[in-house]
Image 1 (tube, rainbow, N blue to C red):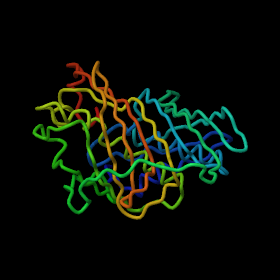
Image 2: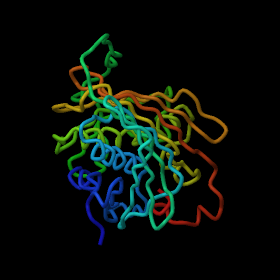
Image 3: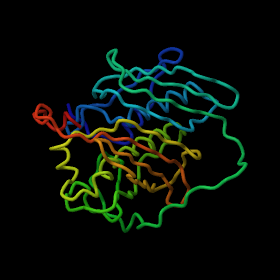
Image 4: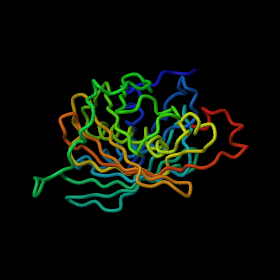
Amino acid sequence: MAAQASVAGLLEVFDVTPAGRGRFVGVTGPVGTDGRQVAKGAQALGQAIVATAKRFPDKAVRSAHAVFTRPVQIDSTVELSVDVVHEGRSTATAVVTVGQDARLCATVTVLADVPTEDVVSHHALRPDVETPADAHPAGRAMLGHELRLVDVVDVNSPDEVGPPELYAWLRCDPIPERDELAKALLAYFTGQLGISTSMRPHRGIGTAQAHATLSTALISASVCFHDSAEWDDWLLYSHESTAAGQGMSYVRGQVHTEDGELLASFAQEGLIRSMRPVDAAIEMPARL
């Protein structure tokens, strides 16, 4: 039976369960009301972040770099294996494999360390854009999720043509208190608008039309955390697509608090291909 997705439910999905040393089991969430049949790649990224944090409880996750090889079917389970490359007093590195039914779906390389006092300190300033109150409300993807777009009314519209950049304010409820869950949530939403950012300069190709004629997918994702993941209200996700061509796109971005603190930076590679006739015959929710 279809269920309404929620931020609270997403946090439960991220919170994978230990199943032996270096092994974890996670759920993929129920079939949503949108009919989607596969999980977003960034969901596996978030689960890998939490699994690594549980494997190295005395350290904080600083970065995660994922490659998504196969889609994860929802309304099922996944298995995560945390293979330690190095574990020292200050830093630790692990390669997390995410599998389902004995098939490898993603690999995630994660760096963790023991935070220390600043030696030098600086960070990129928050972009000077509209406030959340002035931005345009977007459709709600899940309960507890509020998204507002800057200078864009509808990313699905073919009339929304502009430079390859998007700014979006995001507010979530609940905001996790555990650092690793908060980082997983930050990382998950870095994958929400990447393809839309790459498509924005191309007149007449809105997101809805692209889903009907193009095959798009997140292929790789990286996120670096510059501080503990703490915030009170709105987050600003800034996206810039610096290149698109040969069937791929590249997007980089940052996540700031409303007060201007830089919490994370991210980068993504997306696949953009013409839809084959056999693919077009598949119902759209099963392709997403």
